Image 1 (cartoon, rainbow, N blue to C red):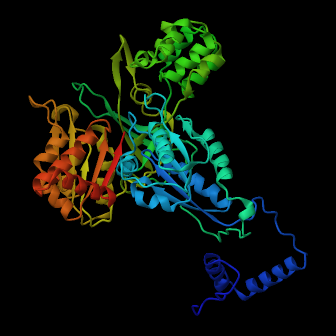
Image 2: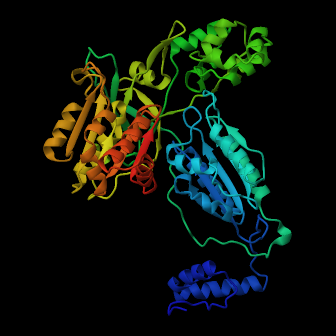
Image 3: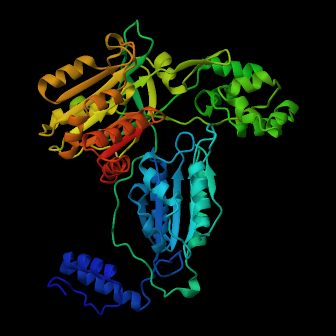
Length: 583
């Protein structure tokens, strides 16, 4: 027992509780100790009523909460599970799939898994290794584990909640006992997820008959401060198209000023922008469905409901509401998935026109989600502002011009002086390392946004670590985003090196992964000397191509076999030196 300890080892408390009491009592003044002694004496004499304990007293039961997250939603829900689990007498432990060792799974007794599906049915990038291990032939048996799975996804994609479904089935296949049915959540997951978490913890709670009547007590332990989920009002201070007038692209730099306290963002974080739907599209939907005179539903569609996304679920709801024989035929013959490809809600109501009530139209839509954009600034340089970099999305399918909801809200209707709503979305997995560490940054197109924040931050604090940027776009003359800023950064030393890839300036298209391959020896040398690698941008092709180029570079420079080169990149990921922020 240490000299400062007040409670002996034989005190009728657990080790953690005894140490917590020691910390409290050792720091207490004589007056505080005297008050506490009198208070406890009053309790024993029945003169001081104790507060009623809502949860039944029971042994603190270990609970492992495993999450696979790309955008942060699954991680936030894991934290919600842990908070409620503590109140219910559990000892929760949160584990990122990126840190999971599959061999450790059989050691768990109660397991809650929260897994997001990314892209077309893929696991989040950080979860790829452990997910493959779980699905592989060497995964251990899991008899004795009781588990529950919450799946996150997007009904706009064919493999809705595919990763969560696969994990749920695999845990059962390996011998785990499913405590409750899996829940599959769309983008509006908050309410169903909260209800599922509450009921799941009630099921997983240990049988009170086996309780030893020890209550888990948390003496003032506090986690990180929570980020507000309430949107903030901002004013657009700058709205600048960074592409030239001869470019085929529109990429907008937004400078936002906050109406009130600015959120404490860090380089690597994002802002969620709450968009509004295109008024012309709203009118088209209202006209076809016979609701053009309903101002209330018009207001609802403006900023609350998603009127572009079309899913199989939408067709099912439409068929149930209207009894439309042709839509029912599409569903019954398995043609719905192929029919909706490239189409939106307006195509459905135009192809199969019927009058709808306001309630029916609302039921065909889902809540309009905010769109997350990487913050392109450091507060140390821009003060009480936040900058975003947003490319307008415009395309044509099935003879109709389409546009991205949020991006064209920014491009066409959010001008300087306008107001909007945003919400901070922290990303602790995409943070700058210590100032002495070298960094490699790969960000074509709008993927360069967080690296502008990185360079600004490092310039402001003055670092010894080197920085190397790989940037690409279509044409040097028309699409070199923040060109003058990068040139100034090279001059002042806040950026050490830049390599560029402009795909339309040469007969054969050149992308950032090609520049990576050309500079592979220097790149591997930086990594061998401790550099950290950051990738931001398109998840569908670019991020995969970058990883493949990195594996090939290790194989070539170090004369490794393909398996050994893959392992070298995997070790970068497991060592938290390979960071991705992809979309």
